[in-house]
Length: 83
Image (cartoon, rainbow, N blue to C red):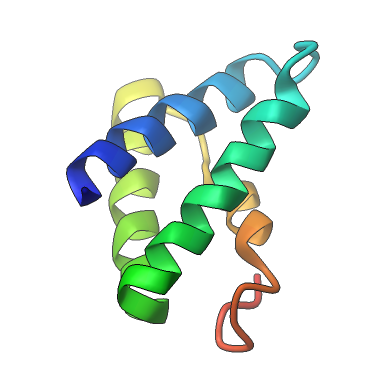
């Protein structure tokens, strides 16, 4: 499941970074939030940290952009996750 979610999350964040004015931007952000909830329910904050670490590095290496601003979409899932 994690590999599938990682690919989906990568695609969603990349899309949002590259298309900030897209009509479906909010839909994409909502799915990013849902993925955070799925990860948390499966593996807690460690799962969130591990996934986001991987995504951040992939996006930086593959499209030379910063994914850090999207970390805050997972705020509120846990008190331990606050960006």
